[in-house]
Image (cartoon, rainbow, N blue to C red; front, side, top):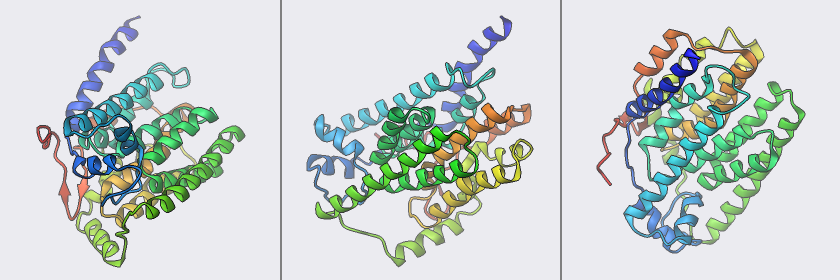
Length: 329
């Protein structure tokens, strides 16, 4: 009874602490989003194939900055509501709700709060829904579609990494099947959005110069460009080793750190790419660690999560600072 009372007090405290630590920033992006939403499904100097928030804005006539931000605040709140419902009431996660505590301090939370107004929230929200319902094909597919509406390319990479995890880690044939269905779903959406956007007037901006600039930025931002992938959960790299066998550990490093870091090194958007692509694989691995490997947080892990600063890297060493753009709306 005493432990239950302590948890009821501790959980709201942890949520407030995590939010205060991550900081709330309104990035906006309405200067691209609103003009594109007005003429959706056509594209006007909008260099992403992301279509989810554009479609919502077009359907509900969200053409003002305040309404654009309200839409994304609503999506961000939805993320946190589903996070709480999935991992505080779940019968799968036992005892101290370790998965919830890990996710609330993760870079997923940092990105969702520091970049309000960006389409990344759809990718993160979809990842959360997909992994929370990975054994339920319809809910899982909805999460995958939501991911793809946020960023079809990143969604495809995330599902590809999940398929690798399913080959080496997942024992359930049902979950393996669902993940591979998710891969084909993302391929289909990527195929459609690529040809659709090109036909609708989207201009490509990829090229060798972009690649060189992105790689240079990644190197100049080192070690922040690496630390920004897991952020406050970086301790997991070492703490998880004693819980995983060699195959499981190498799969974790490859799918959650190495490939997302590589993608971040060839994209101009810095750590955003790595965090979005690694979100679904990371959530799955955290569930795997807790549910199947009985991972427990040590006091030193809590200290690390609380004290580690939120890091988002933009360009050559440009770091986002908590609360820096709160009033930029």
